[in-house]
Image (cartoon, rainbow, N blue to C red; front, side, top):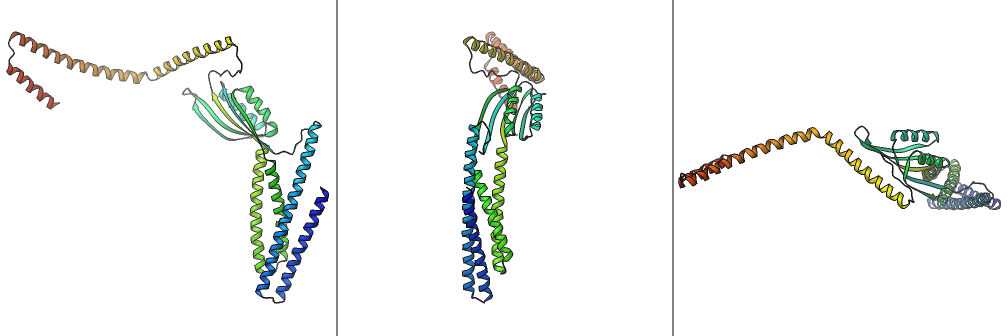
Length: 348
């Protein structure tokens, strides 16, 4: 590895000398009054040399980093076989938990206290429900904990609540991480080279061209460094997606139950559901009793009006039938009654 690094340094020195010689050649040709075509050819040659130099630097840096990564991985494997736990792998860990609790407020306080104690932070949190209105509360949280302390934090969650669902995943980003490092190293070398060339440049056109290239290099460097910081944050701080539900009765999450235990659990759930249903209905009935009484009064009034109208019609029908039977009723009375009924209908 050291031998390759020395060869890389020699190559860089040769490329550096070539770039300086090209710059001096361009300056001398300008001083002697070369034509615009000659100056353009010299500038193009300088640009080509600079590009070749950048490519050589990037390849040598990537090779060195690759060798370092291989060396670190080999040493890490040897250390692991010897009992050590050090590793150069860059791994992002993510966890998903759904829990139940009877003591919602106490659990939330405990979580906040442990997050602070472990040096983590709550990235986001959303809470719904209202205990005073008998609406069960639940929360969705995204918690970031240092990777080396996440297992202790998860043990606390399991101890303080009833875990109904859990999952974990890991993402190995070692190759992407090393690739970003190699790009950053190559860009820094290119930036230093351009700064040195800029200090010795005398022609305004060359200065503008070099400054433009410097701006591009700095933008790419900042972008890669930003991506590297994001990776560092996700690697150093594991992520926990935690869903918390407030319950009155915790779910039995035992994986294996005997025949009698299943019957006992089923009967217990049935009686609990019946009792909870009656309780919920009684609360609803008492809360809505004023509204129910109002509707009952309205329906009673409507019923009495309909009944009274029906009684009046029945009385008229009985009187008419009685008159018909005694011979008092005549066809004229039928016509008059029909006209009176039609008039009443129009008024209505």
